[in-house]
Amino acid sequence: MLKQSLQQKLLQKLSPQQIQFIKLLQIPTVMLDSRIKEELEENPALEDGSLTGAEEVPEYSLEDDDHYERESEKTEEKDEFNIDDYLQDDDQDDGYRTMVDNDSDDDDKKEMPMAISSTFHENLLLQLSLCVLGDHEFLVAQQIIGSLDDDGYLRRPINALVDDLAFSQNIFTNEEEVESLLMVIQEFDPAGIGARNLQECLLLQLKRKESKSESITAAINIVENHLEEFTRKHYDKLERSLGISSAGLKEAIAEILKLNPKPGNSFADNSKQMQVIPDFIITKNDKTLTLTLNSKNAPELKISRSYQEMFQTYDKSVQKDKKLKEAVQFVKQKLDAAKWFIDAIKQRQQTLIKTMNAIMQFQYDFFLDGDERKLRPMILKDIADTVGMDISTVSRVANSKYVQTEFGTFLLKSFFSEGIQTESGEEVSNREVKKILEECISTEDKRRPLADEKLADILKEKGYNIARRTIAKYREQLNIPVARLRKEL
Image 1 (cartoon, helix red, strand yellow):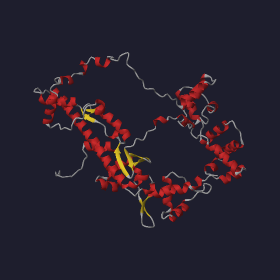
Image 2: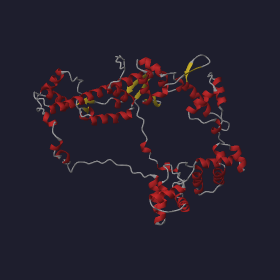
Image 3: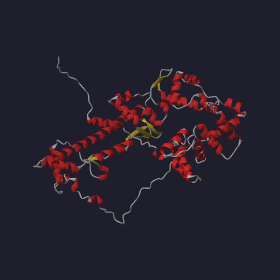
């Protein structure tokens, strides 16, 4: 039997304005500019005040009729606004305004210079064109170059290249011919191109060297016959196997360390690297700190006056047909969206400066002189309780924002750390322990590097009672290898 019942539930849902604010809050300054440009392109009711030079329009409410009456009185001396101009069909536009060229011949036309760079594939094809090869061989060599990875290695099997040529280009060859043409390509610059593994890459570079000194010969022997011992830094075993002294082994290893394990990366374009733009700037005057927000976080956005006038005209219009209502409904939506976006930007500024000010006050001693050992243990909840916000809000601010100080630019997330209690009962940040750990490893004897157990004993002598596994965890976070791999001759 079908039963009907009523249920009452209490649900929490985010409004579109809250979702928009959250998305704006978590993006860094370097991405905020592009997000604002995207909104300016999508919403014609939103304008950039810095470009137009106009005064910012005061905040308004679409339901406030008095506001629109005041605005209309200010614009009485202007030409009468015609709503029909905004309701023209696209097919009535003859395109004249977009096709006419109003530039004068005397105008100074400036063009942006473009940097031209070639990839290593293009460089190899240029070198291939200088080789004396038949049409068949040229096509096979071209396929080999196209199969190289970005780092310059050929990781595709030779028999797979033979199949690719047969099925895709109807070119029939064999593994011997591909091998011979691969050897031709391996003579191209940079040295090491076309290698099938690291060992072959290093050997190609060593054999290309003009000098055939004892160190080069020993380096070739190490790479060709004792590569595993070299990577594991078993130097004593290498000395016995090669029959050379420690000084000779040191010279051979120095030659190997000069080689490039990824020759294709020499043509990499470094211009695509993202630049870090600080969201906050902290300046120091004696013992007083001043916090400022990056000006890029405070854009001069305003509501389009023409769209406000459009709305006023409809409100006073006597004739309200369906077409006019649809047009003005669109205008109202765009005005609402523009106001919400401006409010979200302002709320973002207030949240950023409030959160960063709490972090600065909490870590005041560090921002005075930049000594990491003065960092206090701090977690997200400490700042959330101080500013009266949710932990997730503080996390969104800290994860992607940077602050510029006199001692460098830091990610806000790096100031948060857990606390460790010393033998005296004082609670210190684990950043202080990591700093001491770095200092111990940097001053160690590289011929006898300190193991994790020894590092734990040293820290214990300094008053930090930390287990060996914790030392290993901190060492890995600092990207420091184990003692065996830090060994040097």
